Image 1 (tube, rainbow, N blue to C red):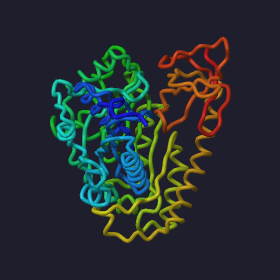
Image 2: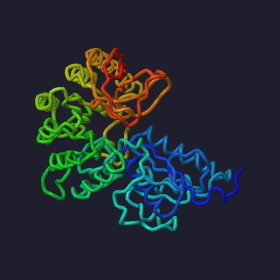
Image 3: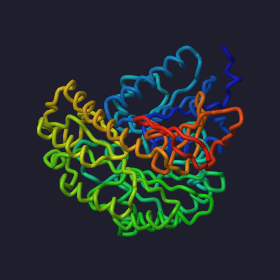
Image 4: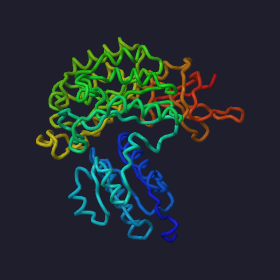
Length: 436
């Protein structure tokens, strides 16, 4: 085993959960580096300190966070690390329980306690670094959080318990941060928040997402801007005008809809009906022809009947989403839905989720087959086996389709670059093509 001196001031940051946690870890890492720590992200070599940024969203995510904490506690007991700290959503939500159940962790911190975490490490919070990050993504794209927290009353969701109320980041600060990222070589901004569409209501007294996106699109070097996590009720349609008119705003929208049954949407407290949702989808597609829509659904919400499920299946079939994911319902304490009876069997939840994904797989296959012969601007992220792996403007990293170009001795594709790719074949979730 290495001596302690070989890993002095080495910090390993481990990130679990969503892209918002990734963003938070990158901010934390910049602060640690400014305090002269040797900080890395999910590094394999031994470190003096491990900081685990946890997720507490649903059961599977919570279990993954707990397993990771236990893994590093075991490493600490073996003398492989000296200190283990836990932060993020799970720690925010269950701190007292965690302190009791896993006391071997040196300290627990909530989602807004970065200054306290730094103080524990005898480091200072550098206010002049606000917005600066150490990217954990490839250097050519970055998640870009424009607001924290959520004011929505969704009955199934524990995020407001962990992240607090909605707080928009001032626009001038976001423009400064995005300009700095562009100077560092970032070409794609993936806008994230618990709800993008609420942006500006708290500080500007109006929905201001359209103006923000318009100003971001003026930044030199930013070639793609992608919108994630839009709420359907009260959707600001003026955002679509900007998307249509500005070439560097991707024709892409991630809009979690959660269900396709009006009865379930009412029980979920989503503030919209299936009929209104379908009208919104039609309006979005009319405003931005060819837009790719990604959505997320929930199977097995309390009281979901076979009729509700069939209504959701019909909704998916008619809507023909470009991208779709589905969760099985997780009964989360302290949410409004926790007062309901979790009456759909786990096996039934999974069967319904599988049926939706089987339907979506067929839709995705048909949509991809229609792309054969077309040419798309493609951003290349990585090399994997015999292929260069890229994405079109219709695809976000990790969750969406990929474009695969066969490697040959004579073909060199610099990662982080754009190329025109002609699609020659396709399967359910991948496109294959040749660089022109």
